[in-house]
Image 1 (spheres, rainbow, N blue to C red):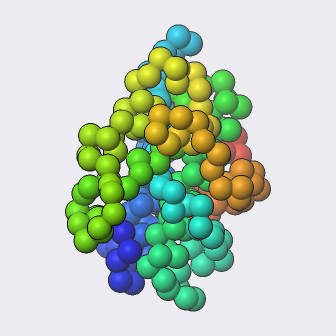
Image 2 (cartoon, one colour):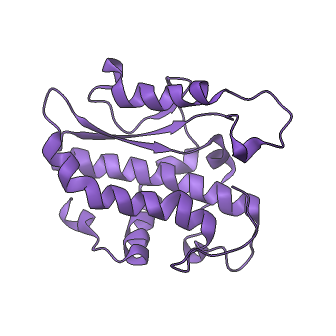
Length: 189
């Protein structure tokens, strides 16, 4: 979070690579297994952890690596917005495919971890920070519900730009290219 400009081993801008592309790739690699494990009465659940920072994020499709103008805040916010866009696109594809898998995105809030060790405002305990993620993963109220942004165990509206389906599609396609997997969304997962 908010690290100086640097790259992952694979050459990706660190915020985008670690916070977003890693999750994108792992989810896609596990997707067949998740689809096999979900049933009509008990969906498999994909939970993505984003941040309220996504509200100020701007997705620069022509500069996802933040090469033109690097800002730690901008790169971090872009990675968190990408997670929300990805989750909504994934849920759209899962629904279109009739899969018994749901995808939701959560905002844990500001949690007392090493990320915030120099912050002097009120933060949540790690247990409090985990509660919305756990709620999304196991709550009966979330059974069959996908495409939701959750904060404090409640469905909340995400940034307006996150609902842009064309932007979701374009990010998905570009992400597939970046991590070297086929864009299976063209054949609906």
